[in-house]
Structures are given as structure tokens and as C-alpha cells.
Amino acid sequence: MIFADDIVLVDETKDGVNMKLELWRNTLESKGFKLSRTKIEYIHFEFRNTRHRDNGVVKLGKVEVPKVNHFRYLGSIIQNDENIKNDVTHRIQAGWKKWRSATGVICERNVHTKLKEKFYRTAIMPAMLYGSECWAVKQQQLHKMNVAEMMMLRWMCGKTRKDRNKKYRNSKTSRSSTN
Image (cartoon, rainbow, N blue to C red; front, side, top):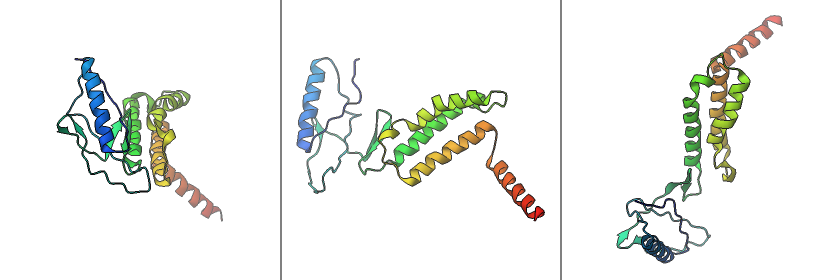
């Protein structure tokens, strides 16, 4: 069976989307493709300040297409509320997944730090930052990404937060004893 994947149709009205969807269905089926009626979904965006309500439904043939608030497209999560929270979380999880697949090497004490650093920059960071060049990121989301990155870097160097806290406490006590 031949199939096509990830098609986006955009229009200002649901009637326009219905016409384009029917055109795509007819064209694809005439070429031997089959449009899945169970995997299709649509998302509605308000691009203008006006609240134009289009009460029609989106249909493929006689089947009503379900409306969703977010969906995954080309590795990114697209949401209708202009928020990227789910996409940031997904990218952090992708970074951790890549990290876990390489922990045998990247956390090994016998592996040179430069090699670990190179692997981190070429495999883990791109997994975490994929698609981020078009994000309108908030400070909270940036902090979340930085926390994940610092955890990975500490583990890569064989350090923990406890080590940092011990060093801080030791430097504080040594300063107070010299006074």
C-alpha cells in the first residue's frame, strides 16, 4: 500500500478547508494513494484580533474530522493557544532519551572529557534544540532547559549537586575560621 504523510491544509474558513481536503482526497485517490480517515485531525487558530466564528464542521467525505488543541508535525508540537510548553517539554525529553542511550560512554570515567563534550554538542544538544530557532521562549521555559542541561553536564563530569554544596559549605567554614 502506498501512502502520504504529514499534509497541512490552511484556509480562513472551514468551508475552504473542506474544499481543499476534498480536492486532495480526489487527487490522491486518483493516483493510487489512500487518505486515512482515522488519522486525520484539524486545529483551529485565531490569527486576527477579530473573533470570527465559523460554526461549520470539517469533513472528509461524510466523516467528521476531529478537532484537536495540539498535534505533532515534523517533530514539533503545534498548539492553538500560542504556547510552546509542550514542545519545550518534548525537546527536553528527547535530550534525555539521547542522553540515556549514551550513558555507558558519556558517564564513564575512563573516557576523555573532550570526547564526552564533543558527543554532547553533536548528539544531545541538537536533540534538545531541534526546532527551537522559531520559539518565542519564556524565561521559565529557558530555565527548564538550562536545568536539564546542567544536570547532564554534572553527570558527565561525575559531579553531583551534593559535591557543589559540600564545596560551598567547606569554603564558607574555612573563611569563617580564618577571621
